[in-house]
Image 1 (cartoon, helix red, strand yellow):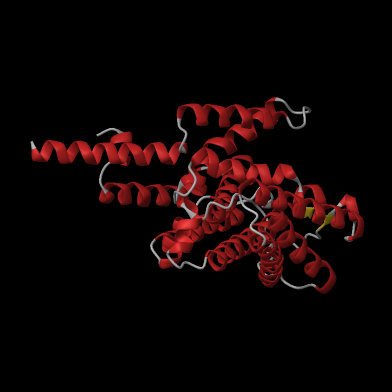
Image 2: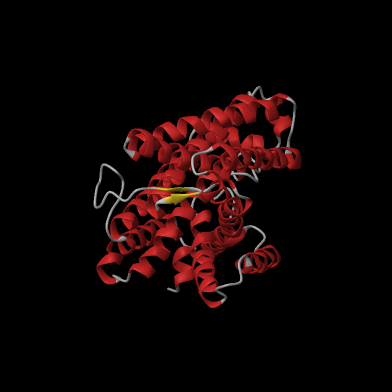
Amino acid sequence: MTIVGLVAGNRQSLKLVSGLFVCGLAALPLIVQDRYYLHIFVTLFLYAYLGSCWDILGGYTGQVCFGPALFFGIGGYTSSLLLISYGLTPWIGMIVGGLAAVIVALLMGYLCFRFGLRGLYFAITTIFFAEMFRILSTNYAPGQAQGIQLPFKGNSFYFFQFIGAVPYYYLSLGLVLGIWCIVYKIERSKLGYYLIAIREDEQMAETLRINTMKYKLIAISLSAFLTALGGTFYSQYVLFIDPTLAFGLGTSTEIIIRPIAGGMGILYGPFMGSLVITPVAEITRRVVEGFSGLHLVFYGLILIAVILLMPSGLAGWIEQARKRRRIGTLVETRA
């Protein structure tokens, strides 16, 4: 049986492949010890996680947010400032940052959904909020435009800082597995059915007495909280954060492109997108070092290729292959 055939086969085969794949990822640091390659995997996992957080709102609910860096930056800045000013452990700071992101998300969401901003109007509004926070952090945050350099405390679990890349590897892998569990539960819950109903036809969902505003606010709050956790992880990983890195359009692009290329509204879609895009981005940065932003050209080429060849993304193509295989099996059985 080919790999494609195994992936496209029945559910038991898919579970087997998934289990073996996760076990392989867990054992990878025992084989790969080079810090650079581990860094690539940390980045891959982190953006797969952030893409899945975005997908809760953009893929499952159909509310496309062009400014997810807003929540990412709030999480990173909040935990960093609490660490520097009060010595508060980032493990608590990330929760505080997540709650701060939820407050902003509820405010932005209420203003948008209350006045019926949908589609492109909602997307533009999210960019506006992200830019507003970028400007505020540039002019009023400690360090201002230069950013904040976090002090290195050594190998310390309390301060969320470790010597070497292996602990960050397992933490980022844990983020991916955690978001998979959350999205899996959402998919199979009443919340998930309501979100998909809103995505498919919001007016029809309202006629079915679904409180669309309530569930859209739940989706944006959940997406914001989880994205903010990723912002804390990133700031602790690189020990630095600045306004452009935290709230910039480039960060939003990095987050959004993964689920778009991998497949929106599919559990493992953002991971598939990150699996392809992250290595390409890292290789591109090394090959064309000194040409800032050139990797975005490659992102554009990848998106064009995906849209033309696989409009539903890589994961969508796999799901379609599974359906075709299932239909073929049924036809053969009945024949």
